[in-house]
Image 1 (tube, rainbow, N blue to C red):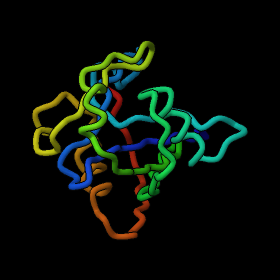
Image 2: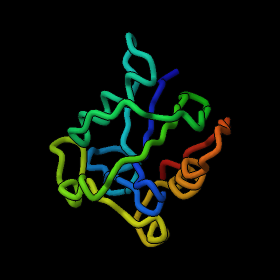
Image 3: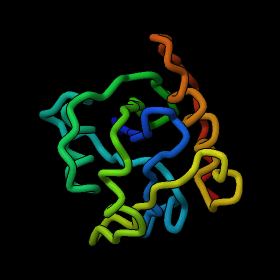
Image 4: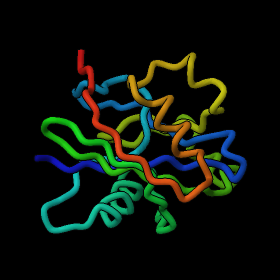
Length: 144
């Protein structure tokens, strides 16, 4: 079983979100998704999302809120969200992070017009739920 983390950084109103257009040769190549990756053997998921955020955005953020866990046949993905002043992060817009992809600050209302992973819309809708609800999802990811 492989463990992954996935995170979304929103503005305070949840109207804009930081996404990465993945550049690696994976099923996500050229698709928009949140930041994230594999949880290392010796780390907790919360530590993994902090590390992945640093690797993919050069930002240290430690105020992540877990909101969903997706279970698949060969993986578990713990999903997190957080907020930040995206005006202060505007330098991230269309910034290429070597080996990771291109970061963008995207209006949530424009998600339907982007090449994206098949689960991105509902993951962002769940992430924008400001309640303390945690979701559990059995998932099959279409990697075609």
